[in-house]
Length: 375
Ligand code: FAD
Image 1 (cartoon, rainbow, N blue to C red):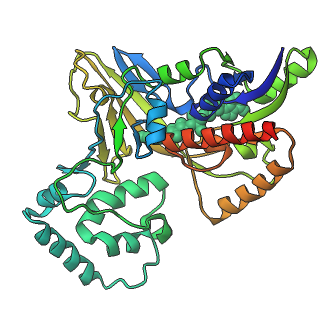
Image 2 (image 1 turned 120 degrees about the horizontal axis):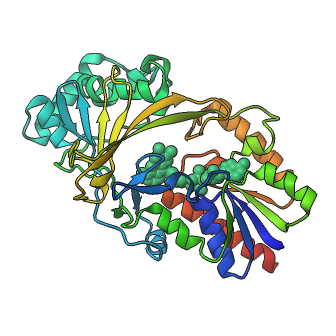
Image 3 (image 1 turned 180 degrees about the vertical axis):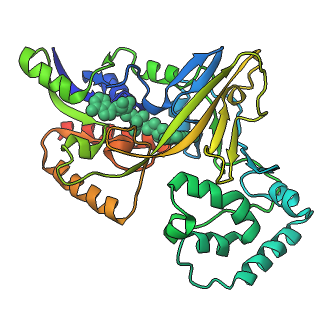
């Protein structure tokens, strides 16, 4: 069997690439080491509810072309992300907006809220923030920082905010309107049949093998010579591809604890609830049915625990600090020297990409391949 492309990874990047190449008459074989397609956007039905197995995924974009693209493969509902934060006995709306401020200080007008924040910032006398704590305090003042940022950030990074660099937080958007919509994007929603269905449609007519790890596949194929291919698109970890020969790129990981509650029809009244206290070990609880305005008799919740990452763990968030970015550049250099291999997606590019950006990047790669083959 001969293929134009061996696509490693059946996530969104690999699937968009394979779909578009297939449309152009190029034959692709997609492999994934997981037992399912769709990578991190995988959803699975439990108690009649689509469960986001690898963390809450909300599609949002202001890019008309990408919105039109994804709408070929899904119908989106009217979900708007409006998370709630729990700090001890207090509940706040996110992102930080007039609902948050009025709950925090009983203020009624934007001028009062701005005055409160400005006076807290002025009292701190921070002129040159030396760490994340000072940076955040100098942007939002004491109350918002202590109640809504400090504990959550420390859990996410596994370090005190005083030991984290200031650059992690460049700005902290404060909204002086009563608007709980987390995203400013033009389009937002959740695909009505779940994300896996999108990837199934993208991969229609494309040969796909799950439970197939790249190296093992190559090794077995060397013996059988069953498959030949011209090029590889690799959407796994770039350092793993090169056997970590220049060193290991670091990630933050997550642990998900899923609970089925067949007797409870509404656990928390919202899809996403953040727990901002340091003492609560998880950062958020997702109640999946609220992504879809579900009316099932039961519910499913997932607690999200940030975790240290060790090689072999699931890599979720790249740690784009100076050391890792410099190391990635060196791996990119190695990649340029390799023949007939492309690296794409969040792991291949060592960058956190939202889904719309992943689609856009995959479409650019498709275009480059087409132009390359026409030359
Ligand atoms: P992946 O989905 O990771 O796909 C890569 C695939 O390659 C995986 O399936 C993996 O098993 C496979 N693979 C790796 N190595 C090998 C190998 N050696 N052999 C075979 N297969 C291999 N984006 C949004 O737009 N909105 C959100 O709300 C949002 N929430 C997120 C929440 C979390 C917790 C995380 C981590 C990400 C979130 N994202 C969100 C980003 C979104 O998940 C990514 O944009 C998208 O999944 C990236 O697709 P990908 O194909 O690059 O990577």
